[in-house]
Length: 130
Image: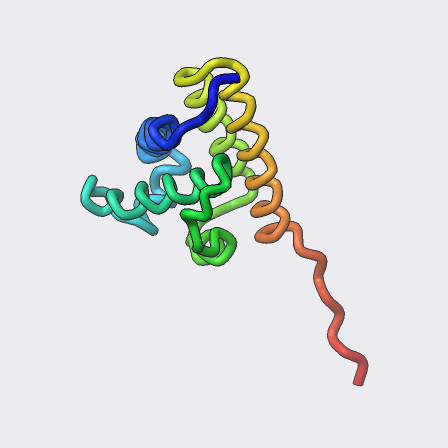
């Protein structure tokens, strides 16, 4: 596999989120949270590059809380994770060699599974006995 570098991550984030913004289901959720103008997205895309750098390169560049950020997204539903992963996989396959695409996809699936479980599949707790 070719070595993943920051430029690959920046290219992926830019191409992928262009697709997200145009997606009929995902786009409105992201637009409501971030905005619709390119200037609205600049800081968010930079944060996402740092996130993926931390994930793929173990750079330590990201110090945020993706769970809390997604918890606040109005309109986010569990089935949207399949749409997100489908777009992500297609973008990876368009940009990278099969091995490099698979490396990104494997991490994306783990992240999506974790977020989806935390946001939508929590085990309800019972009230404490009186």
